[in-house]
Image 1 (cartoon, rainbow, N blue to C red):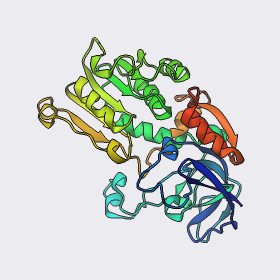
Image 2 (cartoon, one colour):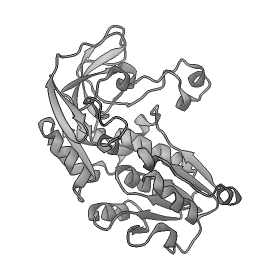
Image 3 (cartoon, rainbow, N blue to C red):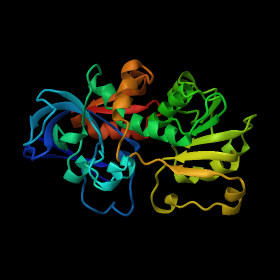
Length: 335
């Protein structure tokens, strides 16, 4: 069974024995695995370690059920939550599934989507009827976007929204903010990313401006920005704090490593402006079914987001394209 590993920016392939599902698990044939920005990250703390498996935006079909699995069937087309609440811990039983202390995930099985087949917890599978694998695997990042917008607590007809970054999650958040009734939507993206800029406007942005040409702190919005969604690295937070109106809510999903993970800001100014910073970390994933519904109904134009597809054997090219091609939005690998 062909399986991909990543060491730094280099992709390696190994032929491994086909896994067998244990109790509560399923064997999945991977039909599509989206390239996430986290697949491109290079953590200096782990760069010298051995190659690792990756790929977590997964759509496929069930090949085998492990002992005790019910409610699923061999041949069923499914997507996988990247992490699923257990339903048994105190947090889950107290309706706080987002704080689950016993998350179920293929991450813990060291089984990932850049492979022909993989093992996953059966509880993570959701039927993807009515969608192609390339579109269905968007449910994972769309669930992240749903959580990001949820935490921002937009007020219909009132909130003026700034969304930093128009990658796949930022673009989907733009469409969701429009649907939620945002009064005005401003987005940022480099002008060289023309397809993202065009799609941002089509998805609902009133203005998409280049932060390299006009820094966020110097942009004239012409209105009070009371909601900011950050899908960019942590260093962009200071710009968000600077332009935020009094009482603004900032929701945030950006990641960086090394010095880039650290942010210094004026806590007094943050306090006197009554700002709120809300971390969106969609693990466990809670909105997979809703994400699939949005994709089926066209609330999110999934096909417009998928710009490149590659077979598994060309995973290196897929990752390089996602990293460097200015026309790339969502790159999908089809094992």
